Image (cartoon, rainbow, N blue to C red):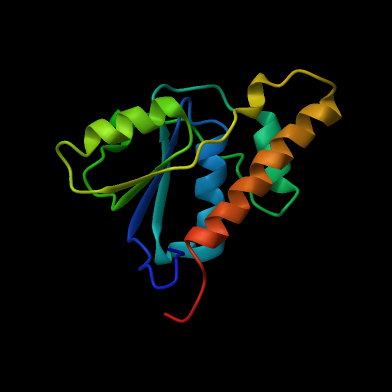
Length: 148
């Protein structure tokens, strides 16, 4: 049951807990892959402070994320997304509750939060790179670039 002929959604929301690492990385990766073909946004259950490590590891692959500001589900509204991809258990629970009143698809891609990692600067960056690369693989697999 691969993604063989799955239609790309029109609007995707990536969600995590604080919207500073995982969900903005995933949104930036999808936007980089598809440009404006898919409306993409990210949100969290609460706002967090900008994360310099996330910005740095995304810049390493040519994706600018320094402009990102943390947003919540309430900041965005949730009425126009076809798909919510949740990246944390808390975001998955929130997305599941939304399906009670909205017709949308949800997917759960559990990702560790690299901001909880403790170690040297390089070890921390490697934890962020691992999440970035894992997200990039998932985004490419789920939202393949092909003929329009």
